[in-house]
Length: 339
Image 1 (cartoon, rainbow, N blue to C red):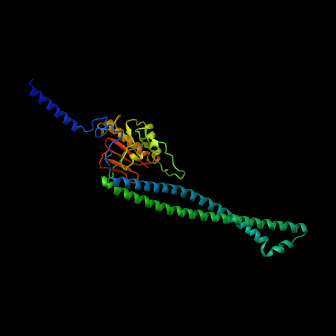
Image 2 (cartoon, rainbow, N blue to C red; image 1 turned 90 degrees about the horizontal axis):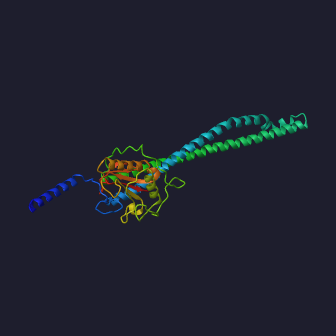
């Protein structure tokens, strides 16, 4: 074969290879997008306004949600206390009435006559003691009744306060939900999606919380096991729980630079590949991404998750699943941001 036909054959084969490569954009690759060996995926420099709004509205929404949950529990406790106090009050009413009737029969205006109508000194003394006991019992029962009535009133007032606080926090939740929806509209989040079934996902161990149930403020203070950077203790807890659930493919957390969660140690990218990042391209890689996402969403409250992005969709506590058309379509990794 001459040199000219051989060059034609090489060019033809190169063209076929190029077409095949374009036709299968999700072919596996061990390097991160852009051809580098970066340990984290490229999230596409998402809109700063979007990230700021999601961060602020997400925190306020979850704070209000936690307050509503706490208020609901407190209302239940107070309702039980009101019922208990009312039962105590209702039981004391006939007792106080009986003592009062006895006191009326032996005391009041006829007290002196009651005492003087005695056959002997001993009888006089017995009647005096009896009258003193009746008066003391009456005073004691009255104090018990007053305390029970006061307890009912106090608990009812506290219950009214809790109901008012709950209404306020429910209104705050709705306000943050509306703010989040406006923010998500920037990236195509105006369409609600069905989301994914999460019932089969494993249950994660809960991240440490404050005594009031809130999440503590945390800094980037733990060595990131995926890079030479740092992550927060809560992010590290999430990382260990995802690993414990059996998701052991490539993952990258800390990334230097930028205003968002990665450099703060509050985000991780869970790749679909054993090494590096590449878009899902078969049933195995897509299902792996779905399962990672489902685990994170199901355990969002337990782990302290702010939002999850995967395969052109975003899950946010205030809104659920929405379409996502940001700078990165997140088809090569599941992104999770932490509170």
